[in-house]
Amino acid sequence: MDSAAVESLDQSGVKTSMIDKNPAAKTLDEDLMKRVVESSMEDLENWLEDSTVDEATGEWGSYDLYHLGRGLVAKEIKTCLPSNPEYLALQLVRQQTNIPVPKVYRTFTITSQVDPEDLSEEEEEDMEITQVFNIMDHISGCPLSTLWPDMSDDQKRDVARVLGGYVRQLRDIRDPRSSIPGPLAPGSEARICDSPVFDDGIHDSRGPFASYDELTEFLNQRQRMTIGSKTMFNGKRRPELREPVDNSLPLVMTYHGFELDKIILGDDGHLYLNDWRLAGFYPMWFEYVGMRSEAAAVRLCGRGKDGCNGSDELWEEIMLEICGDFKKYDDWFLKMCWTLTYT
Image 1 (cartoon, rainbow, N blue to C red):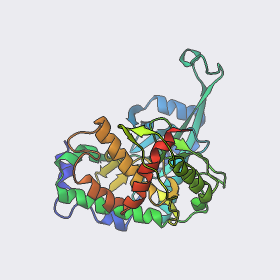
Image 2: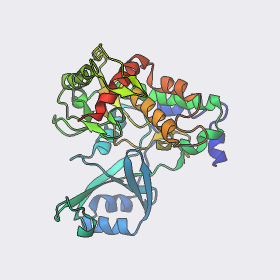
Image 3: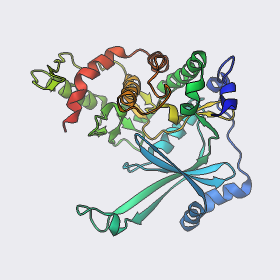
Image 4: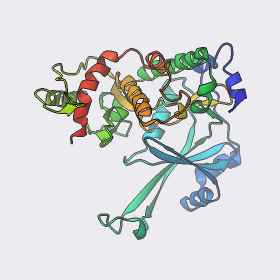
């Protein structure tokens, strides 16, 4: 337990300056910047091999952090997408908000053959794996999942107010992709939507949807599946959902990762959001429903401890403070979500 980190939350809470200004980016010395920018792929691979690796595994896959020294890490992004959505999200957030995020100095990919001994019978022998890396500033600090059990209710509310400020800034972002549901990507091609809203334990993605209208039609098609259904749950027939989805709210930049182990209290006193792989443009209510769904999964599966990640009584209040009150949409979603188990 990092008592110093908890003490930094005392009295006025986490630094209010985190809402007002982004911490100054690190200035890399000339030699280090030259190595980052000019290294060949072979040199980069050797750099990775010589580094210390931390592996982080979560609900939405894993990423490895390669510590390159002098405050730099290479973050491996495991993604099935043909682009680097986290890098694009971080660039957009840095350009249009004051949310503290690490600076990315270089991205690169490594493609290699999969060892035949690691392949199943159904997989092709010449199967390749693509690893995407972002060389970026390392966030030095402590995850809130470690600090949360010893924080007071007032400190937790301070965190919620700061994160709520982040969400409001994200919703003000404007981008040509903001009319296309899903992750950030170059151009205007629609992409698969990875979202905790779509995670039913069987599928964790849907789409692609070329427009908000296409996403709306998908949700309404699932809504219509509830009408006349004889599907049972806990001995009772599932309720019908007669109302189509309310699509009056716009698509907005959505973080999709408000879990305590993905929020870092930095040594500088700022709160950092540590995982932007699922960020993208979604209906405004997706942030709340995704966060509430994750909290429900934590309670069901017993993940987390000592009131972490949604098992304490204050969490419902905190979700509303961060995301806004979207209970009406959540009630609609809860009546429809069982249909997402179908292809």
